[in-house]
Image (spheres, rainbow, N blue to C red):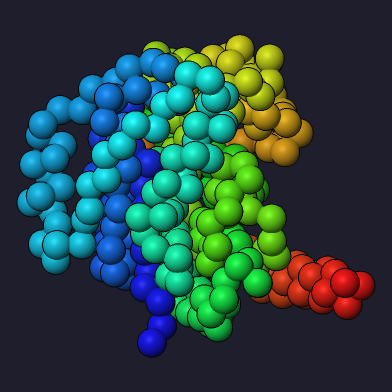
Length: 292
């Protein structure tokens, strides 16, 4: 019997975004786990609150009784924010169950076609048998939403690969494990940076990357808008050169932007690229086994 599709969320200060993300994965998931710090602490020791209406929304939305709320103490003062993140992801994965596909999605990530991503995962179900012997991590591609403007959303015009699923969640950094990467061409809208200034400042102080932020990132984010974005370059929050250029959606509706991406294919990732990267990964790990 094939393992389950187990989808997990780490829910914190941006919990309202789950109302956009959860519907994109709900139908194809067997179970959905929502991890929340029971003391409402961030990984940096900050505090947040969650309105009771949020849990009422989940109860009303969860018509198939798939959602499991998992509350625990995820903040450890002696650990860095990234260490706290890795610890929480591992604790959540244990609840989700080894032997299944462990998919972790953040509240600000919206799959364009989760059904296709799951179908791609199912091609590798054999890796669910003795996963510790053959750990793999499965990638989709972010379209990074950078900033809301008066008339739309600025976004990074080149998709960036990101890990979403694994058969063996021995996380080393965020959702990354030490194991072979498998690339899919699934697209995920990532609203990571498209916040109000207040929300963004809070996130930069409290997320797992708070010690890694490029010093010039915030000043550039504040300066750029829909009229001048072509005058700037290098936008990524860690290594700026990873996001060289921005483009503009003249629309603020996430569902409508998803439709644009599906219909126009302007942000699709080529099959040639996917096959090439997967061949390199297969060869790399084949040589490692041969050398051993």
